[in-house]
Image 1 (cartoon, rainbow, N blue to C red):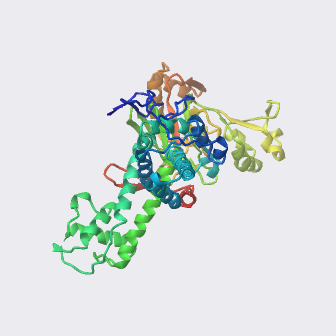
Image 2 (image 1 turned 90 degrees about the horizontal axis):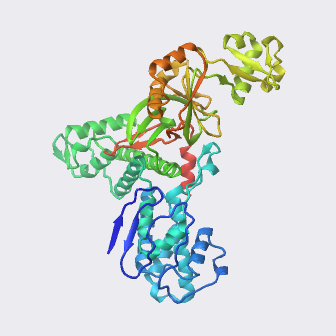
Image 3 (image 1 turned 90 degrees about the vertical axis):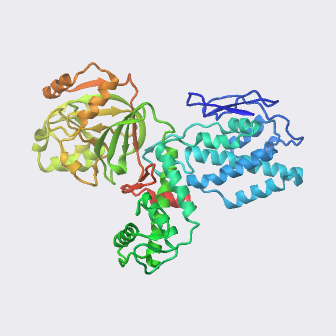
Length: 530
């Protein structure tokens, strides 16, 4: 009898204890620990040398080294659990080689009849499949850095070789897959929607060309399921065969959206359009599931989360959304990077040092045609020696060699408050005097940093957590003084996540698209289905 025990630690997905003569080492997923795990018990009398494993992935080689170069997959329970778990990865949007999957099935079905050399070959294939797919599920099938240079995402540590030894010893291969699959609600709902897609894919949609309200039309049972899946029909309508008013109106609305003949009946073109929309949604789900595997597995108690395509920022404490803000993010030419960090400082009346790209493309050209630009915008010019240079002595031909600092206070490009966190891209959250941007639907307008609407509400959220002994009245006084003040908030961890996802599914299965403003989806999907 195996008893499941949940442990309150990020390092242990779950622990199993077992009776009988199995290893006393607890079953768990091993993440970053450098831990010695015992070899398997009662292995078959088949052994091989290290040279035979030389072409295998590193974690597979380490597994066999730790298992004294014995077979690992002699248990039919473990083999079947792997096959089932690998099949379930379809609902995570992870593609598995059909050739390898079929070969594993054949090896498992005829295992007892295999000769020694073929059992070794089979074992290598089972272990390689486990190691590769477990990492795919945990860190993604594609490494973000190979696709996007400005994604500051580090793969999460996972000790697959040690985990495999424990999983085989406890006959709990399936548990490791279930344990490392992220429990982020966005991921969970996307996966459920993809499962629904593959269920509906088995349907045969048939057109119907006429009917009266309250008629019984057999084709509607399946059509209604697909309309509900596409958010075209409320769940409450049900999936019976009755052609009611709501169904007729939803078909007409869909036909209007797709610029088809508006009849209220599902002709061939209407069905083709439904299937295209379903396939497009599947693509969106698959690429966003992959991204969520790149993102942090767990979020801390308190965090600020920006979804770049949604132009939205939320503050969360103990899984409760406290605030929501509109944001302005980077243009396609100056993208906001994807990263996770921790808030360090809130700066009131921040100064602004012009970054290289803006210096070259914006400031120098504008100042070259109008020297009053510096005084009007409160810029101080510094040369390479750190000495102040007057606008009259400024050399436009060497414009990018200077440092330009804008005085804090009214009119500053960063507004009256800035939120700092460590990253390699010199980006931060900040206020802005250009409030007009928040009135737009498409708010990819900045040079990479994130502009926040109502930033002092965000300041209140941060200061209440960080307790910097600054009241609202004191903050208002500092802001009014136009003097720059930096307030450390690093004592209370508040994480900052700048993330990117283009579809979201709620608990009722309703989805929301966000515009793929940086055109990331298409290329990622192509790579995932190769």
